[in-house]
Image (cartoon, rainbow, N blue to C red; front, side, top):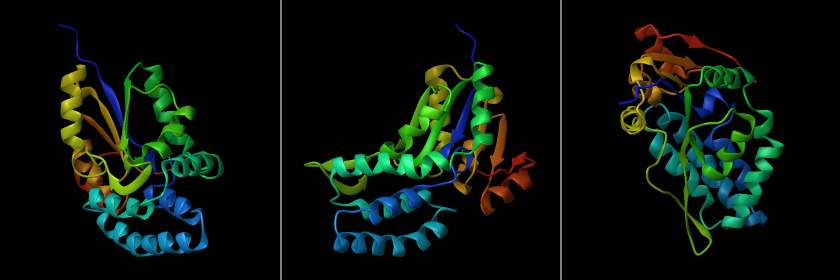
Length: 225
């Protein structure tokens, strides 16, 4: 039997990028086809964003579901086009170089890199262009019917307290030693992700995770774009 190896598990939002689901959804809503459609989609986000701020501390899955409802009935082609624009105009300038350095160090140490993201696949995949090779990317995926987004996310919806469960399953399937592995989290729901490994670290943490890190004695890193 081969020896179990360590891995590095990284939350994209907060660790690698300075933007999250709301920012991406807002960009797409603001660039919808017509004025009436833009007003409708931005209106939805205006209602959803305050809820996201509250739910993001406790129920990030529901927060993500509410956010992406703003893309309902937008065509798959238009979403792909806007995702490309969002990467070029916004997200590519919001990458956190200190977070990327963490991944480069892990790559030099030949550790398996696994990313978890609240973002939809169309938004997150271009980020991989700036990173060392990753073993896996677990992110959200929009549901489409007849070429149109339903506003729903396909299961499993990423962002909640299921990080620890995912790590346990992934470690079993790929021979990962979690006690020697590292997890970089940024949000309250990442607590279970971080307690599943032997080397947790909070990066740019929100209030909930910062308090948990302080109580648990975990290292905390703060850096910006």
